[in-house]
Length: 264
Image (cartoon, rainbow, N blue to C red; front, side, top):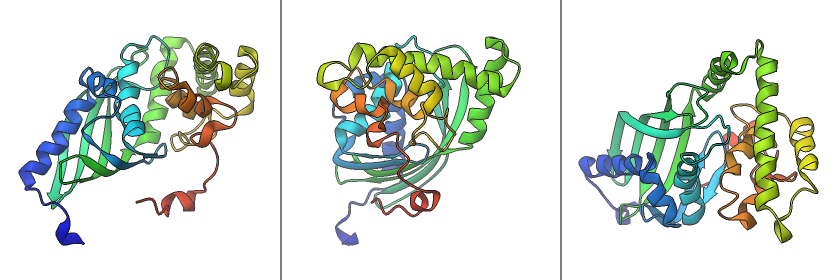
């Protein structure tokens, strides 16, 4: 019942929210990622990110909330993602055990293709009695505008003149990175491609580059998101960059089913 839910003060909720973002930033996120199961998260945490998918449980959420962005900090591979370096909570409301906020997070692209870029992340977060994140729903605001702007900003640095040329450039370089990871980390029972060429052919010719709303669909961009996690748990993450998509990069929902998804 609602009466048994924890009740925090406004100030406590703001502190819990801020503590999450403090740990989301690099390099603090490295410590959270290395813990395997972050104590900032409930063991039965449920999370949803509009641009990607849903994430169940402490370990998977630790990997995608902290591990993904911390490994980018040490990565030399080309990516459209960035390392979170600072944040500013611009809207906040909290009541009971729920906090809603709009936070501007500044990301630094490790490939040096873009300047530090701001992303507004709108969140609803429910905390358990221990102040751990129990459920969250996150939306990347203006994400389509961001992706288009990134491609436009990268163009003069990579010597392309049209959007198609820019997408072709990133298709090649992202596929190369993913396939290199697949060859080095997905071996034995985790093998997902016959060869590098088999992988490259699939990623450059058989799946679309992707859209801002397709980071949880059968796209190259979806596999870009998951690539960095592969070396840490190949048995879990190799399937995500495979032809089949491992339940993470698959076309198994429609616009309406995504909007109406009964997740929590």
